Length: 451
Image 1 (cartoon, one colour):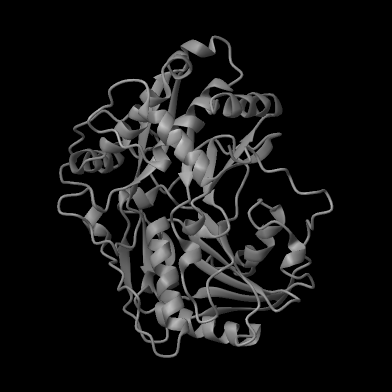
Image 2 (cartoon, rainbow, N blue to C red):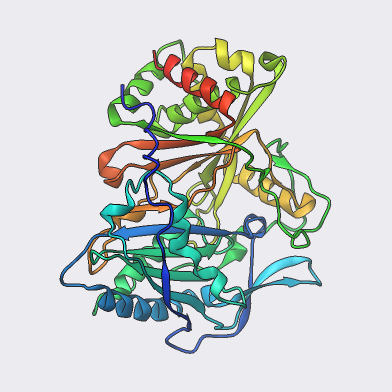
């Protein structure tokens, strides 16, 4: 099997990148854009928080940092024309109680920074380093809360990091990848936009009247109207004293889990034995059984995982749809079932959860949000950055050495993200944060169920 968990970096690893901010400005669209209010779907409404990613680039003698900074600044100005909402500001419509984006060309943040360290000196790019937050710290430099901030931090070696912070109401993973591809295309001298974004969020508007045709145990009703909570709690945000480890699965490990999923009897007609499904089933079982609770075998565990609904709707959404087109699928079972049933049955349940996400189910979930103003509700969320392909985007100065989210250690969120090498490596890293006693049990189960 693979390296079942990655050894934490040595304590001498750099914890403070000693960032020096050299400039912080607002960048505006290169052409005049129309002032308007942008409708946000019920999926967008619950995602009013910022997501940070960092994209590391090695030195390219043909593109020293000063040229990269100029190219990126110009590219951002150009993409703010088709992405006019990115230069806008979030507002609450008090008449409807809904969040909207005021497309008013107020601009996005652009920060230029430097560090005296080299890219190699900051250590393992895969292992989450709290210091990486310094590579996207620019959001605090602006008083009017831009919806996006770009930060270029140059390293002593000539390499650099592009840190991006965007409000999640703007993009899901797929549409953010499209933004990166468009940004890269505009950094070239003579390339057209890679993909024209589809900005019509009414495509995911609730029906009138709403028609909730399915039960939705994956969603939790809330009393306050959307937009009136100071910090909408998608999950319990308490971090507490958590240990965290990365469990690295190589392609042969994933193949082993797929073979294991083929044993144990007949499969459901909806079962797909994919890398994601077998990893989710394996992690779900370990997480549920590691819980330090009385009568744990009788407890029901629910795992949530994102499903892109673009191709599942009728008619399908454009692949270039800009907003959030992801809903939470779920699988639910007693811990006794997770412990006793063959692995194939767990994979069945995960696969069935995704197959449940038909056009009608997705529309029902969106309408549920119109009626109840709620949030995802489960024991934990498995959030996958594995196949998004951020590090496959080709800029004039090349592909990133590595692209990753800036992660927070959360007991209720388990992250999947790629190895260095991206899709070509076929490996996946599983980031888990748990209290010490639960982590010990999780690790033991992770190894035990690989047998």
